[in-house]
Image 1: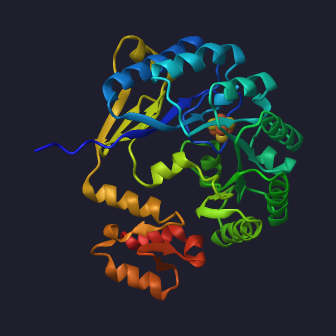
Image 2: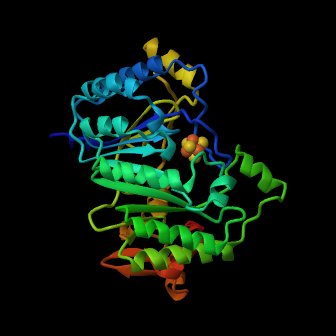
Image 3: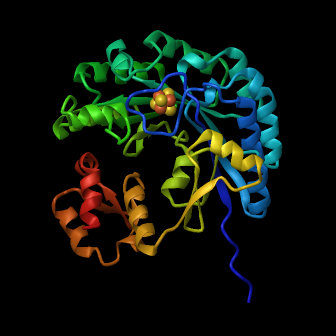
Length: 375
Ligand code: SF4
């Protein structure tokens, strides 16, 4: 009997941990470049890519690449000149349908953008966050509204096929008027894709400490008012809300994130990067120096390996797929009939083409809906 072929690994995530400045709300693994030998770091990424290609040779069929961080656009043209071709070679010269790089407005130059384009980057994710100086200052961002607009113009001039913008709401001190202003300014610029994130207070951040001390507070009603404005304004301008926090013009949805939401296997490279393959979650060491040491000495930089149980996997599928407009397949709902009925009667969810989807009201309280399903 022939064994069932293993599914291909179509997604690659690559983590660049350097940032010029640390934003007080950010919980990702990142640090100032400091004394880090960036050339040695990038060589380690290339080496890890070579090792991963050897390990997963038959299954690696990359369709999407995503560089996150940190600030990948902080890398210099000089560093990129050698890193981009070396990485491509290490990965077997893939031709991904989508290759995203997260970009900080103050790090862009025409030469850098041209280099990204030449090597196949198709999508820029620009960290705008807000279009008013007050909110940007509270967020500790290092760019002004004018610099963000200039950066957006440079991306368009460099002819990136897709440009996405990140915005943030429920920031301390941010008024509803300021938020609506940011939405309107974004709509006026017409990016292909917009992500709107509700600020959360994550552990091990300066914001979390202030939240613990009571300096910052959360108000669900305020969150809902901000979220509601985003949904109404973006949808009325033709952006489809294809996931709770993500809006896109038709054909501009993020393929990479879609893979995560659907539970497809993905490979992660770099410090703190996570891979999930065959329901095993592997996490690289969250320390750049230790990462470089491991890769150079031919040791695995993976520090954690968790075999996800059937229950954990199902819980993830419910939580991630229910956040998408496509909803969750009924196969994941077996035994949850009572909870689903309760969601129907409260008008929080509905069936669409055999899948459970959140209603408009359900989207407002998605986290509680998911918690209710799993209760
Ligand atoms: S620039 Fe991005 S990754 Fe760096 S600290 Fe700010 S939010 Fe975090």
